[in-house]
Image 1 (spheres, rainbow, N blue to C red):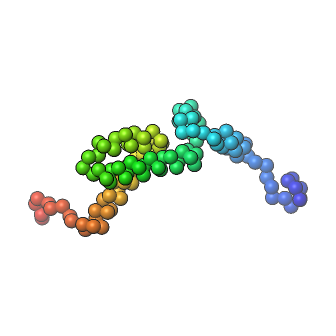
Image 2 (cartoon, one colour):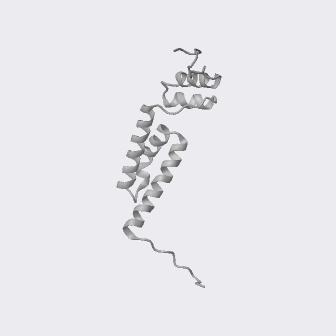
Length: 122
C-alpha cells in the first residue's frame, strides 16, 4: 500500500504545508539576535530552547534581586537590562504582569482582602 494506490488515505502535502516545513527547517538553529533580524525582515520564528532557557534564567535572577532588594530596586537595573535583552519584548511584558499578579495574590493570601474605604457610603 503506497501513496496513490487504492485504499490509501495518503494525500499529497498542500503547498502551504510544504512552505511551513521549509520555514521551520530554515529557522531552526538561530540565536536570539538572528531571530530578531528575521522578525524585522518579516519572517517570524520562535526562540530556540537555549534562548528560552537563557530568558527564563535572566527573569528568575532579576526577580530574586527584586525580592532581596524590595526597597532598593535600582540595584537590580543591570539584571533588568539583561532580562530585557535576552527575552522577546512580549515575554518581558507578560512576565512583568505575571510578577505583579503573583505579588498581589501573595499579599491577599497573607493579609486578606480589605476593601477600600469609600468617602461617602450610600
